[in-house]
Image (cartoon, rainbow, N blue to C red; front, top):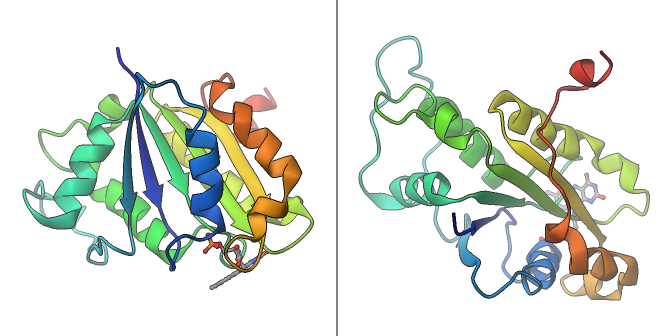
Length: 195
Ligand SMILES: Cc1cc2nc3c(=O)[nH]c(=O)nc-3n(C[C@H](O)[C@H](O)[C@H](O)COP(=O)(O)O)c2cc1C
């Protein structure tokens, strides 16, 4: 199966450090790997409305939500490129992830079975020097992948505050060169790894 990477950009500004780092990593992908990039700030979606226990969610057929759903279903590899905001994913990113809960309950989609076995990756930029502060973001992505039975390739971290700063983080740029070539094991919740 030809690999198809979907990059979901979650920054509240364009051309920021997260996108720069994600593009550096993507440059290394072989030419036969398809890439689709969707900037959530340019493709606003409604707040998630929780109808899970009232009525069926309906598959969106038009607009940005349909675009995102179709792109998500078509991706073998899904890259969440979100800056670190308050130690976790950005609100744009979180809103997109919340819609997964509706897609899980949308008749005919089989979202969970479709996503199972596919690979989730993360890319993030943060201003803090100590990368351990990004653990909540890493945990969010790891656990979300585990919940859906996905593989998890980990999170590529880069340091920066103003746009372009990440290009001075030489360690991050080095990691970017091989990031998507890494093995992505099936995601596990922490309590499963302890067994
Ligand atoms: C709303 C907001 C929250 C932020 N929260 C954090 C944070 O919790 N930890 C951190 O290290 N940097 C934080 N930052 C700094 C950004 O992570 C940093 O500027 C990053 O480069 C932004 O990514 P971008 O250039 O891709 O937009 C925050 C920035 C904003 C705007």
